[in-house]
Image 1: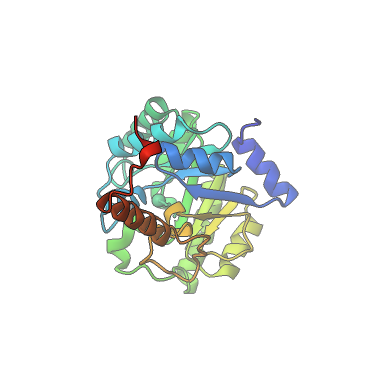
Image 2: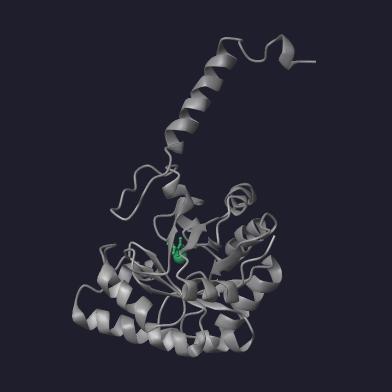
Length: 265
Ligand code: KIV
Ligand code: NA
């Protein structure tokens, strides 16, 4: 299989071929989505919510991100695997940002890292890039800053925040980022960013004028079922499917239906 590289993604943007990205946190799920042909797997710090049950992405540690990333890497043959730098592992200290990124690359075997922010973290982005580590940017709603916003509502509806977002996207492009995620911003603003930068722009809740889409895999499969933002399309209802299967198993055990004569030695 031909591996997806940052170069391949750049060519996809030039050809107008959309990029499909999903999160992944473990070996078994990563195997399925890689074999299905996903272009990018993001080992997102959303693992903090989806895998560990925290209310925000802030508590997850660098060691925990490396554990998830190494599990995903062992499954993947084709997709580009990008890993989130967790909260506290890069802000305001470019040396620490580089050290954290090197740990992710060495200990998990991942292909790139992602950081939230623009101008504020530019020095960190440049220092990571200078070590030869590909960096994906992340602008718009930045969940690691949730206590600054106080809400998960759509970002950059006002001109001031929109102007800063466009500036930040250009700074990230100039610094050498290979792509940018835009989370939960108006579709026309996201489309404008995708036009104004040459690198791929991947949206979540950012409309269809961008170069690709990303969703949290547990959300699009309907494993999480209490989270229904407008941007989420559910392709399955695995919560109900799995619950039903488990209920059937319990019934079969209790009624002595399982195991039957053929299911024993
Ligand atoms: O952690 C995550 O899942 C993400 C995506 C929503 C882009 O950063
Ligand atoms: Na994230």
